[in-house]
Length: 129
Image (cartoon, rainbow, N blue to C red; front, side, top):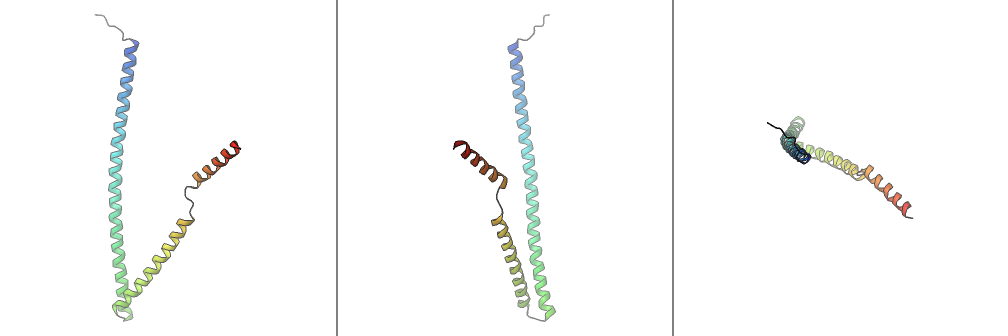
């Protein structure tokens, strides 16, 4: 029984087919990993959203408790306790909003990219003039 050696063309075809199979399997693995990572991140984001909702509800109950405590301890009507808490929360919200707005307007967006673009534009101007 004779065994013949494959020709160079057959070896190249086999190598190309193997490379294609390898690339396909790598792409399939990457897709599966992306799906798995996306699922993990979506579950985490959902849990964080649930935690944020629970925290908001807890803050509402805390503010209600504080308002009722102010009214009861001072012997005032209940609406006065709620009014005091509302004013204090409004002041805090205004201060936080003002600070946040100031930080957003003074922040440089993509500073390294903008600096690099300015340097490139200046370099092109000096090269063309």
